[in-house]
Image (tube, rainbow, N blue to C red):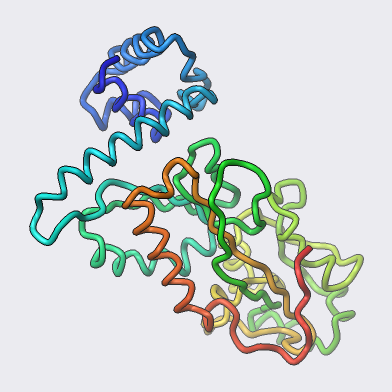
Amino acid sequence: MNWDDLKLLLEVSRHPRLADVAARTGLDATTISRRLRRLEADLGLDLFERTAKGHLLTPNGQTVASRAEALEHAAAEVAAVSEPGGPQATGRVRIGVPEGLGNQLIAPAIADFATRHSRLGLDLIALSGFVSVPKREADMSILLTRPKAGRLKVRKLSDYSLHLYAAPKYLNAHGAITDVTDLAGHSLIGYVDDLIYSSQLRYHEEIMAGLSLRFCSPSIVAQWQMTRAGAGIAVLPHFMAAADPELVQVLPDAVRIERALWLAIHEDVHTLARVRATSEFLIDLFEASPGKLLGEQASKPPLKGR
């Protein structure tokens, strides 16, 4: 078994398209494919599924990749022992996060992370959907629901609140809203129902039964921009909308929804220095951000998630 081939397996596990790996390594795609097949033959295992999306790890491939990754980072940590100031966390960490949270809370904090960890790189995968830690799509992921299965280390990061928001120009054009029942006569913005990736995103049925949405998108950023432009009323996270001068809160005493955020880390990597450093950074960030996440506590009990 060739260590260089194991390192190539790790590269392909992180970048499934061979063209991307070729650009990163200087190897041509044919050579990469040949070396992966050689590694499979050496191990007697099928490590990848060849798909239209690229080379995706099989369960055996995930196991081999996790072991190879542990070796990769152990070697890096040994090399760092002799450096001035002692060993430092090195390498890259891939984090899967909900789109709005990644853009509004985590991305602005990356500069501070860079100052604290000069030899660590981050891949911040901010998407409208889940990035799977068990399938090794990321080292860690922030989720809306606590996972109940998989070889994961899980901890709660924080609660956060959501409220109804609209642009003043929308309210001026369509009249005041004084009661939840008034929402039935307004343009509501939300998620495309069959593209909702978590039941925690079905807010409107908790506010009032029978509400229908006029404008929908799987992207919370798109919903936010529709709302800012005056298209309608949306349920938006406090951390995204509260400080936006283009928006005002609607029915603040009647509608307050709370959800939770969970950090899940694969068991195979949770003890690695790079992963520990990144998880500690996230924990510190969320502990320092209760005002951004929850805002002022409402007198009315929040609408809790299921």
